[in-house]
Length: 565
Image (tube, rainbow, N blue to C red; front, side, top):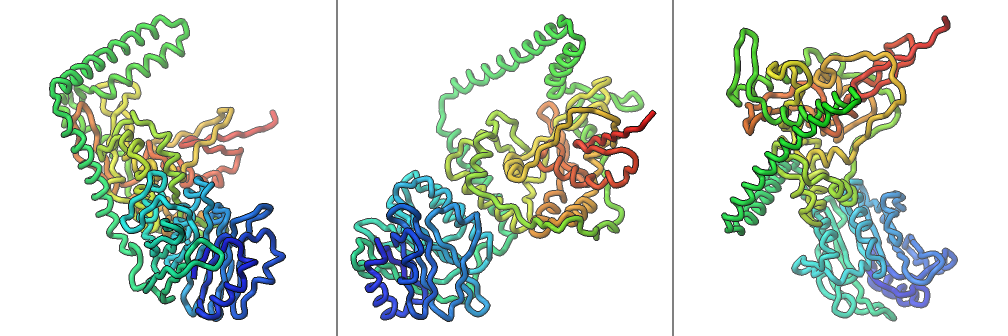
């Protein structure tokens, strides 16, 4: 039973009569108006266990829950749920069933609490795969629950509920013409929902909900093989939207002018680079001169490689052949695991990390700082589309990221990379004088940034131990074993294994691309997780250095050794 009491103390007699006459197993009340615990003892009901969350030092608000024996109820203390100020969270056990229950009162004067409520729904979903129920007065009159439409300020909340698999059961008005008192369930079968009379002395009607506390016959998306289908639909729908927008433009003369303008800009850009070279040559500082020349040279050369020379005086001019040769050079540094004796490493920490949680707020924050002008990845999805797609995009990404993490699966579309060759030094016709610059799918990079860790910076340089092709030669088998030894468990460990396996790369030069080549080892350069995974891989190398103090920085090892002359 769900009621809005508008002061429970002076209506306790009515509550007692309703509870005993209706034999309700769970009674939830909002707007109890209790400010301290002095009145709690007066609110007890025989046969029920009482829980209360009061609004301190001011009038109004508050939540209260009665749970009838033999149901065993305990408070669920979780700081991630406490962000909703006026909420009460319980775990209710009955035989081998564990129900997670929440009671929420959302004041109409606090619009910002909606995002916290959305996060609480997501977090409760992550805590347990079992049945869940959240009810209360949400003061959300802008949502039509029959048609699942809403005022724009409620759209993110409604979309998040749909993406999370929650069902709202109250469709008729509970106060005036508005549906304010709501009952949400997940993995719980509700047989009947009824709107009763007004609670005595309140302008809200009571809501009765009947459900069987038994394991749900079906779970929300427990077949993780459906993730590839969802990814396919995601890209297909975005493509259809872009095509629809493109087809609305019929002014082809304007399109031709735009094409001409883009060619002019490209030519002006080359002229600008030439001017920068002249400026660099006339600069009095040799170091600045060399640095500036290298930067301007790389900007041009990285996008235009006219020919390559191979051993035996073989010259390549075909863009396709150039791409294939460069891709072969880049993949030649990869290794394959020849043994698996390191898969069982002892734990090096008592801490554990099994899953990474995603939130709409966190995803939105990353989208807001995403550079819209960045180059699209191999999936062809421009970052500008993701950033400016509107409030539904974080909700969609939240669902995809959560399914990927909990299922321990990284979609194949996120494991492809496009390589842009960048000239390092030496003759530009030598294919070994180029280093690969990875361009990865923007969706994958956003997901990785949730758990991003930056490099450490040290103010000094000492003796360097340089590991050739260090990033490319990391064994995936040993890296996963290292991760396990650091306390990382499933599903996160399976997700990392999927992230590293079955990757591929192509080289793109002069609008031509090579055939995909498998990435059999290494951490992905240009990715967000790459540096973190590499540091995890070499973290224990310091134990092998017995003289001096080692410092690890990216793929460099510095050793400081002091001695008396």
